[in-house]
Length: 358
Ligand code: IPM
Ligand code: MG
Image 1 (cartoon, rainbow, N blue to C red):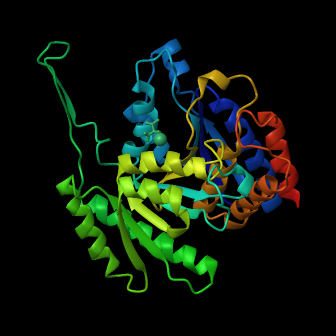
Image 2: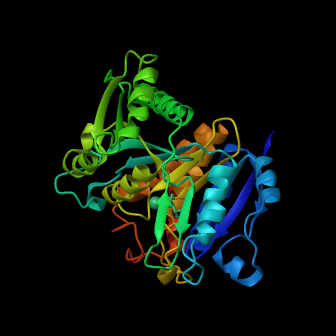
Image 3: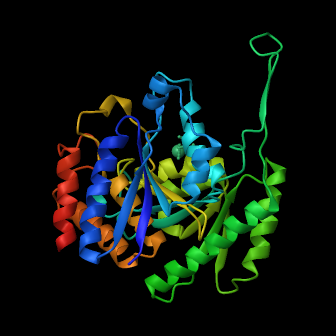
């Protein structure tokens, strides 16, 4: 029996609390489905940085390469320079391990969680493939004459053919898998979301996407500019099956996606390089104001565990966790999937455990 080696990186704020529940579920499901894992703790966070001055080094990135996966809670500390630890840890993982896919499912389990009028689970079920190693996140740029009246700030958006191609290909593959799972004969659809009208270099996406589409003749293709995409996500979310988009646009539209699927407390993501060490995390941040209060919703972390298990090939265990989350959210016991649900973080974890057995 293989033992999975999993990096345990709880991070800041509500991270450790939600991660504890995710790990509780991992432990329970490992017993039901008979697999073994070993956790390798990583203390890195804003808190840790304030105490020790330590950030992510090349040596740590090398260590990560030896793991099967990393589970991350949340990163971000109000007393640390803006984005310093996020860039070091989250982008350190994404860029350091070349996790070029950010897989973000947007699935509404129960109508009462959705802020959109008249929309239910039959309307909100799509997946966003966010390119995860390029775009305006590339960290290429800087300041000239900083803090003078002549200051110049430059940020470069990097789009490579390889980056656009592999993200597009992954999106078409996911669309095929989703269509097979649906099994209703409805063809898969992949929508490219960009801003190629105003940002002409986005045309590299248009062409790479079209090139990949040739290998998937049975898949419908569609296109939306990112502003229109936001509109359709609110007005007609049922139009989407799989979206592929740039790093920044994917960041933005998946917060909107999280809201229509029930809130930041539910949404989860996989930072993936197929076949290599990948990282799984809730989409929410460290939410300092809720830290240490045992009120944060841990379902994002639990769903991240499900995505991690699916990636590791423990597909039955993954499906069991996903089903448990769905069953809990439709049970009528969870009024909202956020810090105001009236259900503590640890109780919510226990409620998932109960559903696992069913
Ligand atoms: C996310 C987050 C990160 C991002 C931040 C924390 C750097 O918002 O994972 O969506 O912008 O990618
Ligand atoms: Mg984000």
